[in-house]
Length: 180
Image (cartoon, rainbow, N blue to C red; front, side, top):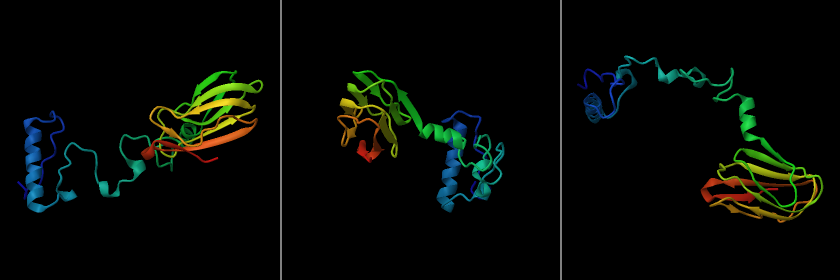
């Protein structure tokens, strides 16, 4: 079978069917005798891929790819929106806010200074995610906590008027590191 090449994979059959098992047997036989499967030996019958060696990202079939010149599947504006979401709140004393997973900036704009409140970091952050906390008025007593299973280094216990504070998340250690 190896000298003839591989037949096309049986894409219309259920995985684990006899035709798939036979195709895998032929593939294993070919690889074990030649050591690899050269691209030219694969039968592309039923496929619309013509040549993977020169395939550019924006030419992939069936993928949107953003607008011209953008090399991802969102537009540049959508990426900025996802990365730099603002969570805005007009809290009162005793507030309890959990930062949303996509939030970059949590802005607190209370009517006046606040005696107390609680801020909890996002539940499902990603490595490199930065969360900045900003308040237009002072918060005298603040409980600032990580979410379940996380560590928060240098949590703040109060916020000054116009105060700005920031942390970056690193998933391998499940830790929020204070950066500003």
